[in-house]
Length: 239
Image 1: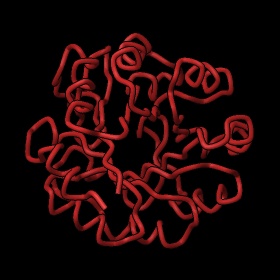
Image 2 (image 1 turned 135 degrees about the vertical axis):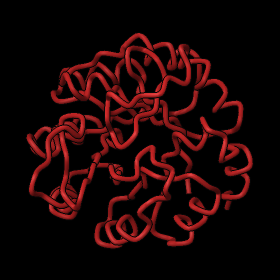
Image 3 (image 1 turned 180 degrees about the vertical axis):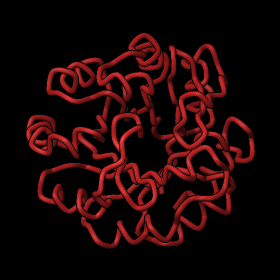
């Protein structure tokens, strides 16, 4: 199972939110690229980046910070937040982003996901952010009446390379991931599923791994609060 250290970007700083609330942001680093370097020196295979301002504004905002990270590290990166048209998808891939995550667009413009996946094979992922069983969009500010399964199944034949499932109620709360719901989704679709939200201990990671159906886990606050040692976790989860 792959560990994806998360760097959430707000005003070009590395922050963590509590349950997606932009007003409840803790700044962890004024130089996100240096934080990225620390993660790679610990042995991570991927980085998970989120343009939080972009998610609300519907366009890239933390471009300087993302580019600084890309110029600092050489591991693959996946990026979400405010990516809602082909121009932005093309732009980020040309900048060097390995995998673009489409969340709001997957709900509001499913054809964009299909078009992007055809244009950029193995570079398009779908982000499913769930609150109280329903998908939330536009920086988690708007809630739909759709469930994760409703969206995920639409894209099984679209060529997307991964689905990132986030339980918003657990994100940044350090209360453990929603192992059951994530595993249910992973067993119901053929696309690899990555867990996000709530991972706070090594035991959480082992529980996700032991489902044998979840391909990866995004970790944010636990790394910043040092409740998980990244190097040790990677070693423990090695095949």
